[in-house]
Image (cartoon, rainbow, N blue to C red):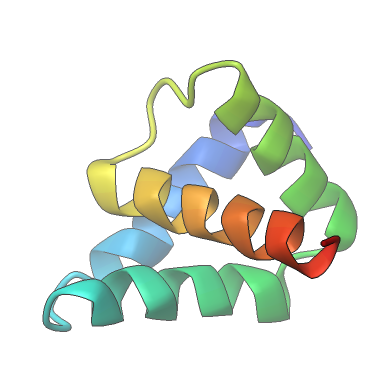
Length: 76
C-alpha cells in the first residue's frame, strides 16, 4: 500500500477517535491500527514514522509513536 493512502487512513481513524478525552484518543487510535491493519501496513507506517511522519495529524502521529514504543518495550 502506498504511503499517502496509509497517511490518509491513519488520519481518518484519528479523526474518528478525536472526541475521546486526552490520551484515550491516542490509545483508541493505536488499538484500532493494531487490531485491524495488516502487519505490512503497520510496518509501512513505522517506516514512515522513522522518516519523520510527514502528513500525519498530531493524534495519528502520537498513535504511531505509541505503537512503536509498545513494540520496543515488548522486545526488552
